Image (cartoon, rainbow, N blue to C red; front, side, top):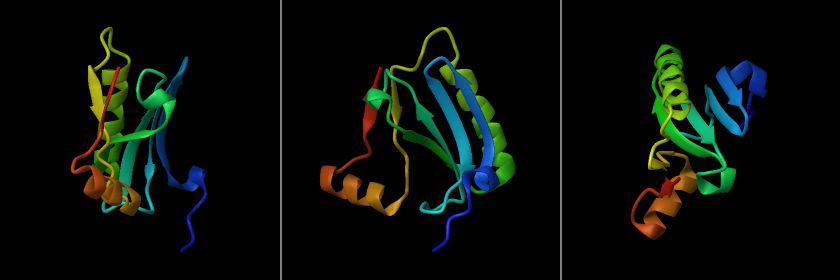
Amino acid sequence: MLIAPYEERKVDRFEKDKLIVDTCAASDSEKPYETGISHPLYKEGKWVIVEEYDTKEEAKKGHKKWVKIMTAENLPEYIEDVSSAEVAKLRNTIYGKRPRYSA
């Protein structure tokens, strides 16, 4: 399977300080688009997939929603990894649930 370069898959990206909210086309999930968050308070700054989408328009709206959530005065208590990638499904099978990462 060939994966298109990031610039071709990119829907939108927000960066401020150590926060990154990135929304792009995904090649390894059940839905074609996803939003990932990287923030040092969650999962040691490693990526957490917070939402998946069926269309590019949904992805654009979802991206804006997550930027608003992650730039609010009070960050969420936790974010949940909702990835449907095969490796995430295996992880969920082993641990019995999707992981939540606390701030």
